[in-house]
Image 1 (cartoon, rainbow, N blue to C red):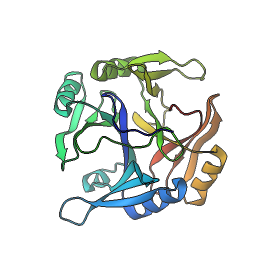
Image 2: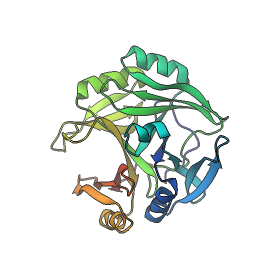
Image 3: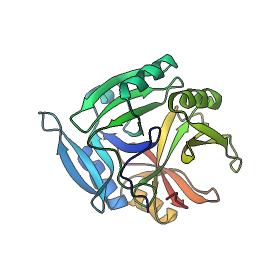
Image 4: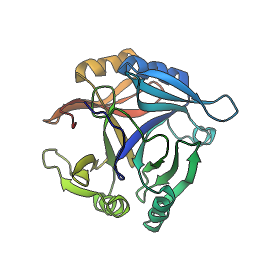
Length: 259
C-alpha cells in the first residue's frame, strides 16, 4: 500500500525510538506490530541499531538511549526525521529562524547525514540527508508510521518556522474541537500541528497504522504498555495515544490511509 523508494525533500521519511532497554522495546514492538529486528552494529563498543522490518522492508528502528539523555532525565521517545537535500544548510537556516542545533550535521557511516534540532517552541526533530539509505520502505499502512503530529503551544509561530524552513503550507482542520492545521509538502499531506494539553510538552508524536483500534489498544495493555487517551473517532479514522512499557509515547491510527 505504502511502498517507498525515495522521499521528496521536506517529507517525513523515518522514525526511530531511543530506549533505555533496547531488548525489551524490541520485544514489545515485535509483538504489537509483527516487526522483525535486524541488528546493525554501530561503533566499537558492541552497540547496535535495530532496524525494524515488516515483510523484509525497513519501517522504523530502535536504538539504545544515549547516556547523556538518560542522565538528564529525558524520557524514551520516538524521533521524527524530515528528508532534506543538505543537512548542513538546513541546520544553518533553522538556527537563523531561532532553533537550536543540539547535534550539528554529522555523517552516519555511509548511509546518510543527519542533525538533531530543537524548534523555537521546544520540540525536537531530526533532518536526514540520504546517501545509501533514504528512509522507510513502507509507510501509511498497518505496522508502519502514517502520520507525524506536532504539539505546539503557538500554532502561528510553529507554522511560520516550519513553513520558512521546509516550504510547508498549512490548511485548517475544522472537524476537531481544538485548533489544528494540516501540513502539506507541495501537494502531499505531511502531518499536522495541534495544541497540547497542559501536561504535554512541545513535541512531535508518531502515529502507527493498525487494522483495528480496539484490538491494538488491548494488545498494548497486554504487552505491558498503557493507554493515555482514546480510542477516539475523528471521522476518517479512530486514534489512540498510548505509552510503551519503557515510557515512550506514540499513537495508533485505524482508518483511511494515503497511498
